[in-house]
Length: 269
Image 1: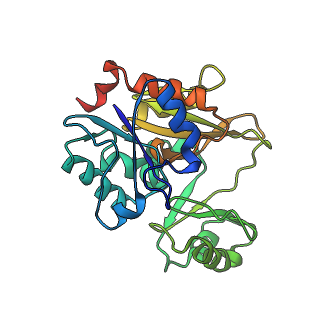
Image 2 (image 1 turned 45 degrees about the horizontal axis):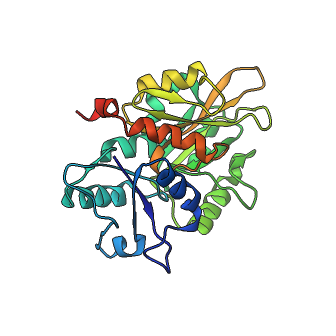
Image 3 (image 1 turned 90 degrees about the vertical axis):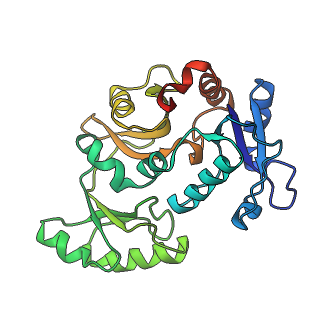
């Protein structure tokens, strides 16, 4: 299996500094690695260095892509003779909240999905909601007051800020019921081929359940402890475009090494 990382924008033969430690650790671990220019890919020129070999499984570590852009990247790998570890459906499943939410409904905050043009405040008010946590299909607002909406009348303002700071609303809008979590309790877990990995020992039961239910070969599960003591799923993400958070490079490499073993092809066969 080949790990493919993004190149520095100004030095196309050098890995981007954000991933430099991972890239070096992967090389030290004996894993096969390449880099590619994101800028060239955006111009329909995909040339990983070293090149992908025929029939080789390919796993990305890069920045977030829309499902449409990931589909282009997937096809570019196939055109080079490679086999993407994650297909387009699996990427979109974990990248967009409305896709994975029905599979894990009882483990996460109640969520209602809307188009940008919907009167969200009116609908939530009619349902008896006093506030919500508002995000698009992928990300929340992390600046200028954040995504916590304590009064429904503030929804248009929060939506406008999301467009301003993110440049677009991806997919649509999700209103999530407010749940209170213990401070600093959020943790990230990686799942590879139905097995949940933790840098701190065994993954909790809720993560192992997600690993059983989500048909994706490589994804992340973010979990936090609610004030009543229950662990709740906060977010899922495709593992290729998820950052390490509290994971060390060494811990993540242990997951990639397991990915590179012959038994790791179970879901792709």
